[in-house]
Image 1: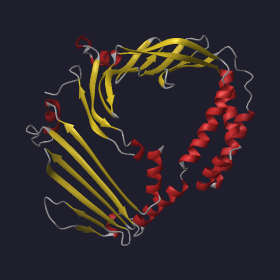
Image 2: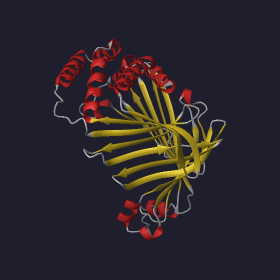
Image 3: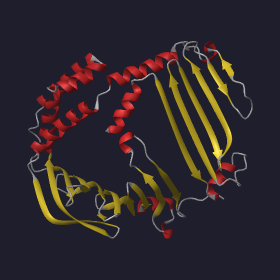
Image 4: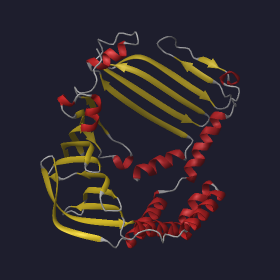
Length: 362
Protein backbone atom coordinates (compact mmCIF):
# COMPACT_ATOMS: atom_id res chain seq x y z
CA UNK A 1 0.00 0.00 0.00
CA UNK A 2 3.00 2.34 -0.16
CA UNK A 3 1.96 3.36 -3.68
CA UNK A 4 -1.49 4.17 -2.28
CA UNK A 5 0.14 6.40 0.34
CA UNK A 6 1.97 8.36 -2.34
CA UNK A 7 -1.19 8.80 -4.41
CA UNK A 8 -3.10 9.92 -1.34
CA UNK A 9 -0.51 12.52 -0.41
CA UNK A 10 -0.54 13.79 -4.00
CA UNK A 11 -4.33 14.17 -3.90
CA UNK A 12 -4.05 16.41 -0.84
CA UNK A 13 -1.89 18.91 -2.73
CA UNK A 14 -3.13 21.56 -5.17
CA UNK A 15 -0.48 20.52 -7.70
CA UNK A 16 -0.43 17.28 -9.63
CA UNK A 17 1.31 15.77 -12.63
CA UNK A 18 1.16 12.48 -14.49
CA UNK A 19 2.73 10.98 -17.61
CA UNK A 20 1.52 7.87 -19.42
CA UNK A 21 2.62 6.20 -22.63
CA UNK A 22 1.31 3.25 -24.60
CA UNK A 23 3.24 1.76 -27.50
CA UNK A 24 1.68 -0.56 -30.06
CA UNK A 25 3.52 -2.73 -32.57
CA UNK A 26 1.34 -2.79 -35.67
CA UNK A 27 0.71 -6.14 -37.33
CA UNK A 28 -0.43 -6.36 -40.96
CA UNK A 29 -3.97 -6.96 -39.71
CA UNK A 30 -3.88 -3.82 -37.55
CA UNK A 31 -2.51 -1.75 -40.45
CA UNK A 32 -5.34 -2.96 -42.67
CA UNK A 33 -7.90 -2.05 -40.04
CA UNK A 34 -6.43 1.43 -39.48
CA UNK A 35 -6.04 2.07 -43.21
CA UNK A 36 -9.76 1.45 -43.60
CA UNK A 37 -10.25 4.95 -42.11
CA UNK A 38 -8.80 6.42 -45.32
CA UNK A 39 -5.31 7.14 -43.92
CA UNK A 40 -2.38 5.06 -45.16
CA UNK A 41 -0.75 3.27 -42.21
CA UNK A 42 1.06 0.61 -44.22
CA UNK A 43 4.54 2.13 -43.71
CA UNK A 44 4.21 2.50 -39.94
CA UNK A 45 5.78 -0.10 -37.67
CA UNK A 46 4.72 1.28 -34.29
CA UNK A 47 2.31 3.79 -32.83
CA UNK A 48 2.88 5.43 -29.46
CA UNK A 49 0.31 7.43 -27.54
CA UNK A 50 1.64 9.82 -24.88
CA UNK A 51 -0.67 11.48 -22.36
CA UNK A 52 0.37 14.19 -19.92
CA UNK A 53 -1.81 15.90 -17.34
CA UNK A 54 -1.05 18.54 -14.74
CA UNK A 55 -2.92 20.54 -12.14
CA UNK A 56 -1.70 23.73 -10.51
CA UNK A 57 -3.93 25.72 -8.16
CA UNK A 58 -6.66 26.99 -10.53
CA UNK A 59 -5.44 25.54 -13.83
CA UNK A 60 -5.57 22.08 -15.39
CA UNK A 61 -3.52 21.13 -18.42
CA UNK A 62 -3.61 18.16 -20.79
CA UNK A 63 -1.38 17.09 -23.65
CA UNK A 64 -2.00 14.16 -25.97
CA UNK A 65 0.46 13.14 -28.68
CA UNK A 66 0.41 10.45 -31.37
CA UNK A 67 3.91 9.31 -32.30
CA UNK A 68 5.60 6.78 -34.57
CA UNK A 69 9.28 5.81 -34.57
CA UNK A 70 10.02 8.65 -32.09
CA UNK A 71 8.47 11.16 -34.51
CA UNK A 72 5.43 13.14 -33.37
CA UNK A 73 2.60 12.82 -35.88
CA UNK A 74 0.09 15.12 -34.21
CA UNK A 75 -0.58 16.52 -30.75
CA UNK A 76 -3.11 18.60 -28.87
CA UNK A 77 -2.65 20.83 -25.82
CA UNK A 78 -5.58 21.88 -23.64
CA UNK A 79 -5.55 24.33 -20.73
CA UNK A 80 -8.53 24.97 -18.46
CA UNK A 81 -8.46 28.30 -16.63
CA UNK A 82 -10.19 27.94 -13.28
CA UNK A 83 -10.57 31.64 -12.59
CA UNK A 84 -12.21 32.64 -15.86
CA UNK A 85 -13.57 29.22 -16.79
CA UNK A 86 -12.13 29.53 -20.30
CA UNK A 87 -10.56 26.72 -22.33
CA UNK A 88 -7.47 27.10 -24.52
CA UNK A 89 -6.67 24.59 -27.28
CA UNK A 90 -3.56 24.31 -29.41
CA UNK A 91 -2.57 21.88 -32.17
CA UNK A 92 1.15 22.62 -32.62
CA UNK A 93 1.34 21.00 -36.07
CA UNK A 94 -1.12 23.63 -37.34
CA UNK A 95 -0.32 26.70 -35.26
CA UNK A 96 1.77 27.99 -32.35
CA UNK A 97 -1.24 30.00 -31.16
CA UNK A 98 -3.95 28.84 -28.79
CA UNK A 99 -7.65 29.07 -29.56
CA UNK A 100 -9.63 30.53 -26.66
CA UNK A 101 -13.11 29.19 -25.99
CA UNK A 102 -14.96 31.42 -23.47
CA UNK A 103 -16.72 29.71 -20.60
CA UNK A 104 -20.16 30.82 -21.78
CA UNK A 105 -19.62 28.93 -25.06
CA UNK A 106 -18.48 25.65 -23.52
CA UNK A 107 -21.94 24.71 -22.27
CA UNK A 108 -25.08 26.30 -20.94
CA UNK A 109 -24.24 25.02 -17.49
CA UNK A 110 -20.63 26.21 -17.57
CA UNK A 111 -19.40 27.87 -14.40
CA UNK A 112 -16.26 30.02 -14.31
CA UNK A 113 -15.22 28.26 -11.12
CA UNK A 114 -15.74 24.67 -12.36
CA UNK A 115 -12.01 23.97 -12.63
CA UNK A 116 -11.26 25.47 -9.22
CA UNK A 117 -14.08 23.42 -7.78
CA UNK A 118 -12.67 20.27 -9.38
CA UNK A 119 -9.25 20.91 -7.86
CA UNK A 120 -10.78 21.65 -4.47
CA UNK A 121 -12.86 18.47 -4.72
CA UNK A 122 -9.68 16.48 -5.42
CA UNK A 123 -7.83 17.91 -2.43
CA UNK A 124 -10.90 17.48 -0.18
CA UNK A 125 -11.19 13.87 -1.30
CA UNK A 126 -7.55 13.31 -0.39
CA UNK A 127 -8.28 14.54 3.15
CA UNK A 128 -11.26 12.19 3.48
CA UNK A 129 -9.79 9.00 2.02
CA UNK A 130 -8.69 6.36 4.55
CA UNK A 131 -5.00 6.19 5.39
CA UNK A 132 -2.93 3.04 4.92
CA UNK A 133 -3.00 2.51 8.70
CA UNK A 134 -6.80 2.71 8.73
CA UNK A 135 -7.12 0.31 5.78
CA UNK A 136 -4.78 -2.19 7.44
CA UNK A 137 -6.69 -2.01 10.73
CA UNK A 138 -10.07 -2.60 9.06
CA UNK A 139 -8.70 -5.35 6.82
CA UNK A 140 -7.01 -7.14 9.72
CA UNK A 141 -10.24 -6.97 11.73
CA UNK A 142 -12.20 -8.61 8.89
CA UNK A 143 -9.59 -11.32 8.32
CA UNK A 144 -9.14 -12.15 12.01
CA UNK A 145 -12.90 -12.33 12.58
CA UNK A 146 -13.43 -14.53 9.53
CA UNK A 147 -10.55 -16.85 10.47
CA UNK A 148 -12.01 -17.37 13.94
CA UNK A 149 -15.20 -18.67 12.29
CA UNK A 150 -13.34 -21.15 10.08
CA UNK A 151 -13.55 -24.50 11.83
CA UNK A 152 -13.57 -26.92 8.90
CA UNK A 153 -9.87 -26.71 7.93
CA UNK A 154 -7.89 -29.69 6.69
CA UNK A 155 -4.10 -29.65 6.46
CA UNK A 156 -2.39 -31.56 3.65
CA UNK A 157 1.34 -31.91 4.17
CA UNK A 158 3.86 -32.92 1.48
CA UNK A 159 1.63 -31.54 -1.26
CA UNK A 160 2.83 -30.20 -4.58
CA UNK A 161 2.03 -27.32 -6.93
CA UNK A 162 2.86 -27.64 -10.61
CA UNK A 163 2.63 -25.25 -13.55
CA UNK A 164 4.22 -25.60 -16.98
CA UNK A 165 6.78 -28.19 -15.89
CA UNK A 166 7.88 -26.39 -12.73
CA UNK A 167 7.07 -28.05 -9.41
CA UNK A 168 7.30 -26.82 -5.84
CA UNK A 169 6.54 -28.59 -2.56
CA UNK A 170 3.77 -27.06 -0.48
CA UNK A 171 1.56 -27.52 2.52
CA UNK A 172 -2.08 -27.14 1.52
CA UNK A 173 -4.91 -25.93 3.71
CA UNK A 174 -8.38 -26.90 2.52
CA UNK A 175 -11.07 -24.62 3.98
CA UNK A 176 -14.71 -25.58 3.54
CA UNK A 177 -17.61 -23.27 4.41
CA UNK A 178 -21.17 -24.54 4.43
CA UNK A 179 -23.92 -22.01 3.95
CA UNK A 180 -24.73 -21.77 7.63
CA UNK A 181 -21.09 -21.12 8.56
CA UNK A 182 -20.79 -18.58 5.73
CA UNK A 183 -23.80 -16.65 7.00
CA UNK A 184 -22.42 -16.65 10.53
CA UNK A 185 -19.05 -15.41 9.24
CA UNK A 186 -20.66 -12.54 7.33
CA UNK A 187 -22.75 -11.54 10.34
CA UNK A 188 -19.79 -11.65 12.71
CA UNK A 189 -17.64 -9.54 10.41
CA UNK A 190 -20.46 -7.03 9.90
CA UNK A 191 -21.01 -6.81 13.65
CA UNK A 192 -17.32 -6.14 14.30
CA UNK A 193 -17.26 -3.45 11.62
CA UNK A 194 -20.30 -1.75 13.13
CA UNK A 195 -18.49 -1.43 16.48
CA UNK A 196 -15.19 -0.32 14.93
CA UNK A 197 -14.37 3.34 15.64
CA UNK A 198 -11.88 3.61 12.77
CA UNK A 199 -14.46 2.57 10.16
CA UNK A 200 -16.95 4.99 11.71
CA UNK A 201 -14.43 7.82 11.37
CA UNK A 202 -13.77 6.94 7.72
CA UNK A 203 -17.45 6.81 6.74
CA UNK A 204 -18.48 9.94 8.65
CA UNK A 205 -15.70 11.94 6.98
CA UNK A 206 -17.71 11.50 3.79
CA UNK A 207 -21.27 11.55 5.11
CA UNK A 208 -22.83 11.29 8.58
CA UNK A 209 -26.05 9.85 7.14
CA UNK A 210 -24.11 7.16 5.29
CA UNK A 211 -22.87 5.77 8.60
CA UNK A 212 -26.42 5.72 9.98
CA UNK A 213 -27.56 3.78 6.91
CA UNK A 214 -24.62 1.41 7.33
CA UNK A 215 -25.43 0.60 10.96
CA UNK A 216 -29.11 0.08 10.12
CA UNK A 217 -28.15 -2.33 7.33
CA UNK A 218 -25.90 -4.27 9.71
CA UNK A 219 -28.73 -4.48 12.27
CA UNK A 220 -31.05 -5.87 9.58
CA UNK A 221 -28.40 -8.39 8.48
CA UNK A 222 -27.54 -9.66 11.95
CA UNK A 223 -31.18 -10.01 12.94
CA UNK A 224 -32.11 -12.15 9.91
CA UNK A 225 -32.84 -15.77 10.75
CA UNK A 226 -30.79 -18.46 9.02
CA UNK A 227 -32.61 -21.42 10.54
CA UNK A 228 -33.66 -22.67 7.10
CA UNK A 229 -30.06 -23.08 5.94
CA UNK A 230 -28.77 -26.62 5.78
CA UNK A 231 -25.56 -27.31 7.68
CA UNK A 232 -24.68 -30.05 5.18
CA UNK A 233 -24.95 -27.80 2.13
CA UNK A 234 -21.41 -26.71 1.24
CA UNK A 235 -21.16 -23.24 -0.29
CA UNK A 236 -17.46 -22.64 -0.79
CA UNK A 237 -14.18 -24.56 -0.72
CA UNK A 238 -10.78 -22.93 -0.93
CA UNK A 239 -7.38 -24.62 -1.06
CA UNK A 240 -4.41 -22.44 -0.15
CA UNK A 241 -0.92 -23.67 -1.10
CA UNK A 242 2.02 -22.39 0.98
CA UNK A 243 5.67 -23.16 0.19
CA UNK A 244 8.60 -23.67 2.58
CA UNK A 245 9.16 -19.89 2.73
CA UNK A 246 5.62 -19.39 4.08
CA UNK A 247 4.60 -17.72 0.80
CA UNK A 248 1.23 -18.41 -0.80
CA UNK A 249 1.96 -19.70 -4.30
CA UNK A 250 -1.49 -20.98 -5.20
CA UNK A 251 -5.20 -20.78 -4.52
CA UNK A 252 -8.08 -22.87 -5.77
CA UNK A 253 -11.54 -21.47 -5.04
CA UNK A 254 -14.60 -23.59 -5.81
CA UNK A 255 -18.31 -22.91 -5.42
CA UNK A 256 -20.29 -26.02 -4.51
CA UNK A 257 -23.94 -27.00 -4.90
CA UNK A 258 -26.08 -28.71 -2.25
CA UNK A 259 -24.64 -32.10 -3.23
CA UNK A 260 -21.04 -30.89 -2.90
CA UNK A 261 -20.41 -30.78 -6.65
CA UNK A 262 -18.28 -27.97 -8.10
CA UNK A 263 -20.35 -25.42 -10.02
CA UNK A 264 -17.63 -22.91 -10.81
CA UNK A 265 -13.93 -22.78 -9.98
CA UNK A 266 -11.05 -20.34 -10.17
CA UNK A 267 -7.41 -21.16 -9.51
CA UNK A 268 -3.92 -19.76 -9.89
CA UNK A 269 -0.53 -21.33 -9.26
CA UNK A 270 2.95 -19.76 -9.37
CA UNK A 271 5.56 -22.39 -8.41
CA UNK A 272 9.22 -21.46 -8.74
CA UNK A 273 12.61 -23.13 -9.07
CA UNK A 274 15.38 -20.67 -8.23
CA UNK A 275 14.87 -17.71 -10.61
CA UNK A 276 12.39 -19.52 -12.88
CA UNK A 277 8.65 -19.72 -12.30
CA UNK A 278 5.61 -21.30 -13.88
CA UNK A 279 2.22 -19.62 -14.05
CA UNK A 280 -1.29 -20.98 -14.48
CA UNK A 281 -4.61 -19.19 -14.05
CA UNK A 282 -7.75 -21.18 -14.85
CA UNK A 283 -11.51 -20.60 -14.83
CA UNK A 284 -13.72 -23.71 -14.77
CA UNK A 285 -17.45 -24.18 -15.16
CA UNK A 286 -18.30 -27.46 -13.44
CA UNK A 287 -15.81 -29.93 -14.95
CA UNK A 288 -15.26 -27.86 -18.10
CA UNK A 289 -12.30 -25.50 -18.53
CA UNK A 290 -13.53 -22.10 -19.78
CA UNK A 291 -10.27 -20.16 -20.11
CA UNK A 292 -6.64 -20.47 -19.08
CA UNK A 293 -3.59 -18.24 -18.95
CA UNK A 294 -0.33 -20.16 -18.68
CA UNK A 295 3.37 -19.79 -19.25
CA UNK A 296 6.83 -19.48 -17.72
CA UNK A 297 9.19 -16.69 -16.76
CA UNK A 298 12.11 -15.64 -14.63
CA UNK A 299 12.90 -12.96 -12.05
CA UNK A 300 16.37 -11.52 -11.51
CA UNK A 301 17.07 -8.49 -9.31
CA UNK A 302 13.38 -7.48 -9.26
CA UNK A 303 13.18 -7.59 -13.06
CA UNK A 304 10.57 -9.94 -14.54
CA UNK A 305 10.41 -11.53 -17.98
CA UNK A 306 7.68 -13.96 -19.02
CA UNK A 307 5.95 -15.59 -21.99
CA UNK A 308 2.27 -16.38 -21.47
CA UNK A 309 -0.51 -17.87 -23.58
CA UNK A 310 -4.26 -17.28 -23.36
CA UNK A 311 -6.14 -20.43 -24.36
CA UNK A 312 -9.83 -21.31 -24.48
CA UNK A 313 -11.47 -24.26 -26.20
CA UNK A 314 -14.86 -22.59 -25.75
CA UNK A 315 -13.83 -19.35 -27.43
CA UNK A 316 -12.09 -21.18 -30.27
CA UNK A 317 -15.19 -23.28 -30.83
CA UNK A 318 -17.29 -20.10 -31.03
CA UNK A 319 -14.87 -18.64 -33.59
CA UNK A 320 -15.09 -21.78 -35.69
CA UNK A 321 -11.31 -22.23 -35.89
CA UNK A 322 -10.83 -25.26 -33.65
CA UNK A 323 -8.63 -26.94 -36.28
CA UNK A 324 -5.93 -24.32 -35.60
CA UNK A 325 -5.50 -25.05 -31.89
CA UNK A 326 -6.91 -23.33 -28.83
CA UNK A 327 -4.53 -20.39 -28.31
CA UNK A 328 -6.22 -16.99 -28.48
CA UNK A 329 -3.25 -14.72 -27.77
CA UNK A 330 0.32 -14.49 -26.58
CA UNK A 331 1.49 -12.12 -23.84
CA UNK A 332 5.16 -11.24 -23.65
CA UNK A 333 6.52 -9.33 -20.64
CA UNK A 334 10.02 -7.91 -21.08
CA UNK A 335 12.25 -6.26 -18.47
CA UNK A 336 9.42 -5.38 -16.10
CA UNK A 337 11.28 -3.63 -13.27
CA UNK A 338 9.25 -3.44 -10.08
CA UNK A 339 12.15 -2.57 -7.76
CA UNK A 340 10.54 0.84 -7.07
CA UNK A 341 6.97 -0.41 -6.79
CA UNK A 342 6.89 0.83 -3.19
CA UNK A 343 7.15 4.32 -4.71
CA UNK A 344 4.40 3.61 -7.26
CA UNK A 345 7.00 3.38 -10.06
CA UNK A 346 7.59 0.53 -12.48
CA UNK A 347 8.71 0.07 -16.07
CA UNK A 348 8.69 -2.61 -18.71
CA UNK A 349 7.35 -3.75 -22.04
CA UNK A 350 4.14 -5.71 -22.54
CA UNK A 351 3.34 -7.18 -25.95
CA UNK A 352 -0.03 -8.80 -26.70
CA UNK A 353 -0.43 -10.54 -30.06
CA UNK A 354 -3.47 -12.36 -31.41
CA UNK A 355 -2.99 -15.92 -32.66
CA UNK A 356 -3.84 -17.15 -36.14
CA UNK A 357 -7.19 -18.51 -34.97
CA UNK A 358 -8.53 -14.98 -34.50
CA UNK A 359 -10.52 -13.51 -37.40
CA UNK A 360 -8.25 -11.95 -40.03
CA UNK A 361 -8.91 -8.74 -41.96
CA UNK A 362 -8.04 -8.85 -45.63
